[in-house]
Length: 495
Image 1 (cartoon, rainbow, N blue to C red):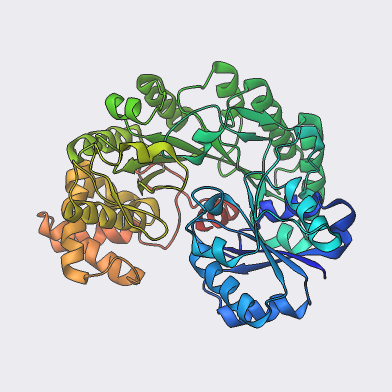
Image 2: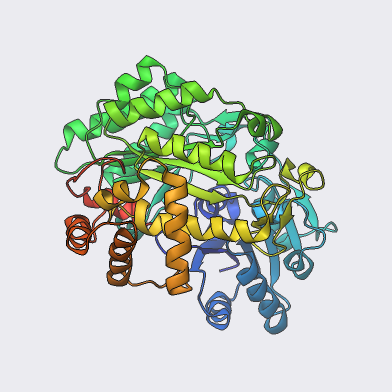
């Protein structure tokens, strides 16, 4: 193969949508190109050996925050053992602040931003001349109708075993400063009928798990309803072979027509990722986030009470101007609404995001290495930030896992943040670890903690035993026992 399109995915189950877009739009060069994906953690020598086995002239790498360090080692080795192979980089991690990045210095060329048009053109110039003189090439954004959709390039193995990423639109109209989408001018939709035809084709091939990467699925309600109807029709026609769809939802925009459609989905068929990030209006204003908090809370409550959608709601600790008291208040408010998962994230400074403008005034200190996590702010010192990081990890293990759905209600009581922080500090003092805690040991520790809080041993053991079954439940954390989620949902949550 003359051209190899490659990346290191976070997991095998993640199939790179970006690489498939590039291959779909290679034009006359498509016959000379192929995709070769790897997973982070693989040996550098083995990756390089497999890449070179195809005797490529050009290798294009997709660079992301999770793979930049390992891909840097791959590129460095390639340049040692096969200096004649041309290395082209692209992706969000290298599209901004690229000048001082080691991987950019090692590579031959860099495409920033959209690569659908610019990468194929650059490859043509590399292979056929005239040789490009400039190292950095700003990606040209073509009309959406000119972009060939990549979904036929998902292999049968992808369809059978991997999450299929799809997008009905690109971009985002909002300007949240912690997000790279803040740099977008708006959102650009693909032609809806063409997109739905691609979904139809995937479904006919056996695809049942669809993850939408659109930043704002419910921005255009008419479009949202048509996409949802596609899945409702499939569910009605094949109730014993259901689809599962994941969307990102704007929390304060849920008109009645959309609620009507959502309410029709059965359990285990629909997941929403909802970004709250902060309930503090002053913090929201600082980071240019427009959000009607009352409406957002009302909509989350409605989804919990009147739909079967699985809700994954995000909060971010470490935003400028937010201290622990403010974050705790927002956390408690969100827990009270009853979503299935509260995703407790720690702020990361993605390259190119406007959040950096607050660095000096708010004393924001970020880790210089990926994923550039916040280490301290004016309002949260380093030690406290580490406690929050541990809280987030234990929260995933105990609350978000769904394995302690009855026990977590007892643990949280009427002060969820403070009570779970006390548990987090205690379990860390017992284990000195946040990873590689066996499930049996975790269950034992949770039982011990209940006894520290005053519960007798028999009651604590019985409570933990009531839901320690290694399952993922489909009910909110405040609910009682629930039937296990459908296997397709479990597979998606695990990914």
